[in-house]
Image (cartoon, rainbow, N blue to C red):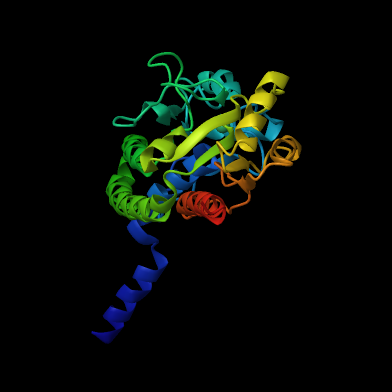
Length: 302
Ligand SMILES: [Zn+2]
C-alpha cells in the first residue's frame, strides 16, 4: 500500500501540472498592456514586452530584434493604430499568421475624442480621432482584461479555464484599485493643473480632476511660441497650480514655463517607464500617478 502511495506521489512530481501544454507566444506592446496580459496568463506563461524602458509610445522606431519578436508571436495585444502608429504596417503583415488584438476596440471600453493642445476651453469635439490613452481608467482596464481573456481562450482553449479565473481575480483587484484612487484624489478635485501631453483625459474624467490644458498633443513635436505664452500666463495668474512633466521627455520646457511663477512642477508617468514589467505594474503605475497628483495639488495650499 505504502509503496503504491509513494509511486503515486512520485508520478505527481514528475508529471508537470495539467500535462503542461505550452502557452502560445504572446506579445504585448506597451508596459500597461503587458501588465494586464501577464495577469491573465499567470500560471500558464508570460507575454513578451515590445516597447520597454523610457521610449515614447507615439514615435516608436522598430529595432531588428523587435521584428523577430513580432514574427514569432501567435497573439499580439496593442492599443491600436491611434497609439502605436508605427506598428500598423508590421502588424498588418501578421494577418493570417497571428491573432492581433487592438484593445482600443475592446467591448465596453469608454473612448474619448482627441482634443487640441494648449488650454482647453469648452467641450472637446464629439467626433474625429480618439484619444488613445485608454488604459488610464481602471474601468477600461477591466474591459481590456475581459477582451484579453477572450482572445487568449480562443487561441489556447486548453487553458481557457485558467484564463477566465485569472481575469475574474484581476477584475476584482482593478475594482479595489479604482476605489483606492477615488479616495486618494477626492480632496484635490477642484485644483487646476496642466499636463505635458494629453495622456490623461480618461484619468481626469474618471476621478473628476481639473486638468485645464496640455503643453502638447504630440510629445515629439516642438511647441509654438504662442502656446508657450498662453500656458505661462495660466501659471503666472494662478489659473493652474501645478504643471506636470513626464520622465521620457526633457524637463527643460516645463521648468521654463514654471520659472518665476508660484506653480509647482510634478511628474506623471503614463507608461511606468522605470517600473518592472509584470502583473503588478499596472496598479503601481496608477497609484503612483494618483499620489503624484494628490501631492503636487495639495502641497500648494489654498
Ligand atoms: Zn501618449
